Image 1 (spheres, rainbow, N blue to C red):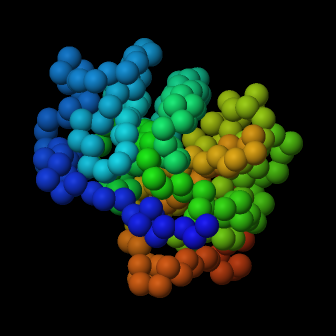
Image 2: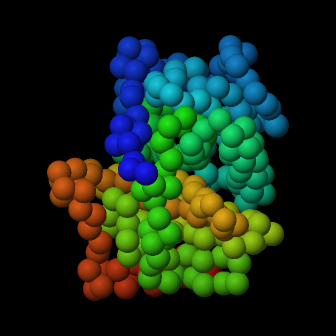
Length: 261
């Protein structure tokens, strides 16, 4: 059956979007995530982590939820203690699987933004879990997007620098092959986030984390992507770019050293 190209489009409600607070790009002083007493549509609390419906559902045909990660407005995944970062990822994975188990969505997105260039509007650290009624990201995201130059190969966890990136350049892939190694994975992710912020801090100080799964595959796949201005070849022609071998080799070596120390 031919794919309906309209299913690959998400309609953004501009009227709702114009009302969203922005503490990333504007000098707004009020943070709605700090004002916990006025939060609405809370689904679950676990310590300082709060799962709730997004108060500004800008995407049509979707169910937008988010996890307020902590009560520290200036915190970040890269700076959490290892134990807290693990509890956070466990909580978010649980909610991701819970939304998928509703069987109401073609696919469920699970991602987070950090920094000015990452596409978010609230500085307070949070993760988003979004059910899409009609669009299945598996139609576009394939296993080959997670093939890359090895950074770290273990029995339960793999890290590589993508050779088939979605958007281009330094996309770091993580593959979790055994949920029992989640603590190890999270530790590598935190170290990678800190490495990227140091490496590219002068350019953007921003990154995204995206989580994926595939049918009939028990692995969990993750991309951590430092964010820059999107290159025009991708904008105009959907052509991703990767670094030359001369640039990629020392990057891989330095990142490998960072995650192992």
